[in-house]
Image 1 (cartoon, rainbow over the protein chains, first blue to last red):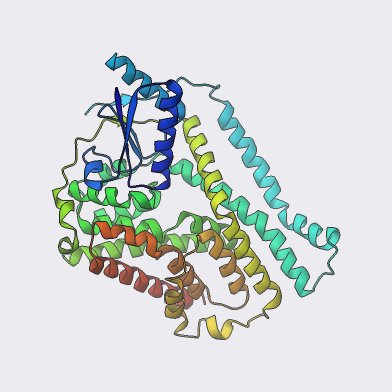
Image 2: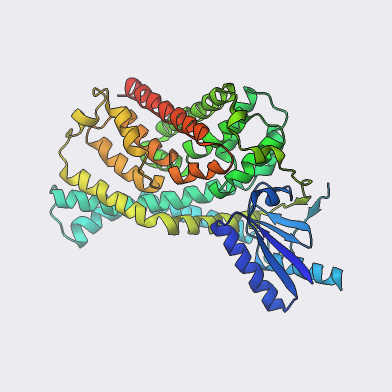
Length: 84
Length: 351
């Protein structure tokens, strides 16, 4: 199973990234657990300063912007291959 | 530090989008230069209003300003987003690291204008700056510059009042940010910062180095333009509507008594009036523009605009998570006083 974390205090962009990631994971029919991290202390442990951030299997893949669906699916596919 | 380049295979030839941008820019300029003619034609020929009446003047002002300001807004947001795609809070932090106060304040104020930054990122940014040892005064220069020099306001001033006034706005905004940061830095601000900030253990800077291509930058800038214009256009129309009514119906020099440069209390009153008001710069500037045509002094209306745009309570209150109310009040006081001084200065120099 792939663990994904969406880092962000709950602003509009963070919500959008969360929805996009869920949609991509659904479309790819992957077993993904998506968690929203809103606590500032926890967000900071990933070393980012600009939200929203996206963490796939413990690795920050993007921050400070909303990546495209194509990028998200690439990261999820990579993670799926790595765990398989 | 692990650095990886995340670039997806290009989907279209590299020349295509940049060429499209250039073509759109040319069309933009051509249309821009015909706007007054277009508005005249619409008002006097198509609608057939008799010239030199209040109604016709209001309608003409409205029909000229709506496309003009919306085009200006769209063009400027596109340009600003494109420029800002070369900056990020992480790069800014790296640039500010190890800078002393003074030089640090100057650089921080400049970067505050250039760094793309949404108010919901204010808290992580604050913690990130504090953590990497950037002095609080320098951090505040950044945090003051961001709202005080508003890129939309800058663009609109440039389009409506010309380069000189836009430059004055930019320079005074930067000076406010630099001095504000220096003053706060002298007040031992550490005592006002929430305890948890000092204890945050931030992880290693994750090594994703996102390096956008020109296509990525253009797509992002176009998206931002669509989003911001989509959000503020009703304010623009309302603002221009109010401006048009003032333009057509308020007699010349009517405001010279109340808002002219001779009224000493006008500037502080304008700033006080502006604090609770919260509007997008795009909505307030058409009103300001019309007020000036009726004898209001530049410093007074500029102070009003800066107060409305820069001192927006919801955005400042986000910072309460990391600093206490006293420092927030100090922050508001310093910015408000700086705006008052700016207003007097402009009235003195230009009025």
